[in-house]
Image 1 (tube, one colour):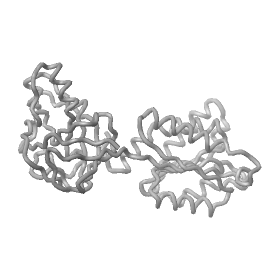
Image 2 (cartoon, one colour; image 1 turned 135 degrees about the vertical axis):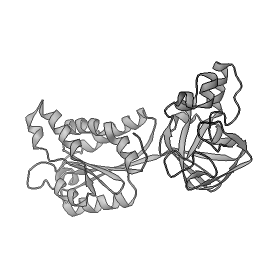
Image 3 (cartoon, helix red, strand yellow; image 1 turned 60 degrees about the vertical axis):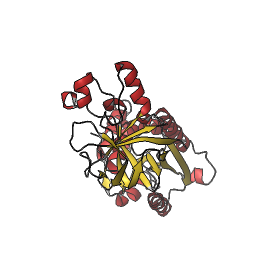
Amino acid sequence: MKKIEIKSVNISEKKGTIKVPVDVIELCETGVKGDAHAGAWHRMVSLLAVESIEKFEHKSKRKIAFGEFAENITTQGVLLYETHPLDRFEGKGIELEVTQIGKECHGDGCAIFREVGNCVMPKEGIFARVIKGGKLKAGDALEYKPRVHKIHIITLSDRAFAGEYEDLSGPAIESKLKGFFESEKRVCEIQRTVIADESDALETLIVHSVNAGFDAIFTTGGTGVGPRDITPETVWPLLDKDIPGIMENIRWKSAQKNPNALLSRSIAGVIGKTQIYTLPGSVKACNEYVDEILKTYIHLLLMLSKVDAH
């Protein structure tokens, strides 16, 4: 695991001003105690890496003091702008969760911008919320822990469960998901399970996955109108909220090429913080569905984690 070294901790009493290095800061449930930017919101604590500051110094030909970009914590060791929301920094009993990469530039409302005409914080600074508080000072170190996205893929097929047919749709979904997370430079763990078209078995797996903290569940199979197609009927009563627009959009797009796509009864929704999608059983359909689902996957993940991504 990578670590960041704390180079400076900084506070300002007013917004729009530079922060001043202090010996120690106290992280509490609203951010940095005594800092103007503390509050019950997703940008409690700001962090900026020395690596970013040094690039700015080279371009501006000016030495930058710690806190001058209004960052609460100045770090070294990790390119902070390459992290992702929901990643964490942990150590000394402290846990910070990344909530935002960069921000809108305030222009003349920013002290460093008024002087230099540019600022690195909007592109390379990050923001975090306090999960566990404590005292932090220069010289301390925090461990960088990327968020591991846990996904369960459940294939419903009597024939595949009996070993009479090779499950192809489950691996197809897994391949799509792995490609997506790799392209996003995010970490994922995927579990695949094959079961018969049995409602009780499906409900048991879904409840277990939600309780185990899986971020998403993808089912494949059982969305048609045959006598053994029981997936939507099983999943629907378990949902806390349904998200009809996702599947309506997919059905409409697919139907432009094949009207039979309108016969799919696939649904999408959330159970607690777990996203759930019921996909058809064909590989072609699974690939098409996953491509569309992934367009909103991260945004929905952040919404369920109470992170304002607008």
